[in-house]
Image (cartoon, rainbow, N blue to C red; front, side, top):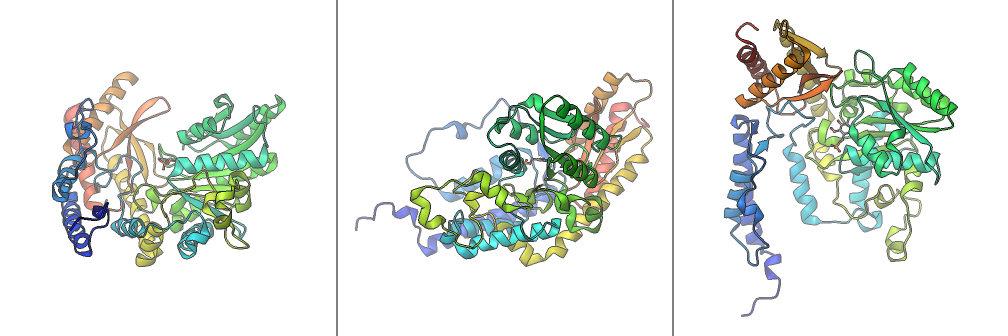
Amino acid sequence: MKQRRGADLEPSSEAVRTMLAAATERIVRHLEALPAAPASVDVPLSTIDPILTAGLPETGERLEDLLDLIFDRFVPQGVDTASPGCLSYINSGGIFHAALADLITATTNRYVAYRAAAPALADLEAQVIRWFCDLAGLPPSSGGVLLSGGSMASLTAIVTARRERLGSRFDTATIYASDQMHHSILKSAMIAGLSLDNVRAIPTDETFRMRADELEAAITRDKAQGLTPFFVAGTAGTTNTGAIDDLEAVAAIARRHHLWFHVDGSYGGLFLLTGRGRGALKGIEHADTIALDPHKTLFIPYGSGCLLARDVKAMLRAHTIHSEYIATIAATGDSAPNFADLSVEQTREGRGLRIWLPLKLLGAGTFREALDEKLDLARSITNALEAIPTIEIVARPQLSIVAFRASPAGATDERADALNEAILTAVNRRGRVHLSGTTLRGRFAIRVCVLSFRAHEARIEACIEDIRAAVDEVLGAGG
Ligand SMILES: Cc1ncc(COP(=O)(O)O)c(C=O)c1O
């Protein structure tokens, strides 16, 4: 009998079960091997696996062979941001519960861009956003949208503020954020058609928080020159050191000068789940927009960002366009807005279930406990680092990042920077942890960012051992 065209696109129930079983086996084996696997595997950047340069295949291959390739050959390369030893970038691992939700989302493949097409699934996503708005202390008028990450949240915030405060002319518009701002603020300003020359990097104090006096002075200076200050971003957890700007002070200045007050809480915002986080983030409730990144501080796999707005209608005004071919499905009546009207995206994956399912399955308390653990671990690693004679703490943890460097006696700044880079390389070469480097006040510093849900005390002890050993190796035993 002739097979129906495209039949392979709809595998039988039995074939689906077989595929799931094969993938399940590889996934479970991968998770079991993760703790002992290296946190990073260097591969020469100039080479590409020949399989990945081959042309479009005309016929299919066996799933088992492809799973072998993926798990044995592709996944192990580079920095494993899912490893318990990954203490470098702001990565948190990616909990399995969310991966399971993604499988369900992709299998059911429902269209949440317009609520009418999948009302309950859109409402589920809206519920996640409401939980976040409540957490941040935003009023009932608030709302938001789940985005791919913090950078999209920065762009969506700037575009919303631009529409609300500037109208169609923005050649004189100026933006303010600390000199520790994430580059997505700059990138978003550039993409939104604002001049990069008009983005002011406000000096920070010795704890890397934006100086309120410098902010106000810059705004006043720009106003006097006929410029149009319209947007200030307070950072709630900088990328470099986790510094949290004084959000109360920034909010007051924004109010005084009629600036849009954005909070970049991509890293720090979801520490609101913890008591310490709530204390440190006081003032966030005054924000006009807030960026949060569940793929950082809620341990969800990559692709989960969020922008909240105090007045969701502002986001709608900036992002809604009507067209005849979606008029029927786009009608909302009095109900919640369509996600397609809240950002640049129309069609995209349902992003709610990967956050909703873990929160429903585990409860917020589980996440609070895990985040509290990260705050504790960052403090314990700082104490241990302080006990190493040559080490100087450059930034104490305000959240879960500590920055440090070795200060070898008698070395010039350049020499000390080179030695610290060598220490970082020596730590990472051991493979138990992966740390990163940055530049703070013009000098090289090593960062430890404890955010992986898989990082516990034993791995932090291994990290300290490896830092000690690397310092001895580079500076000579005893530093
Ligand atoms: C403070 C801050 N804002 C924004 C971003 C950008 O987020 P994403 O990488 O999700 O686009 C980051 C990323 O590390 C960040 O640390």
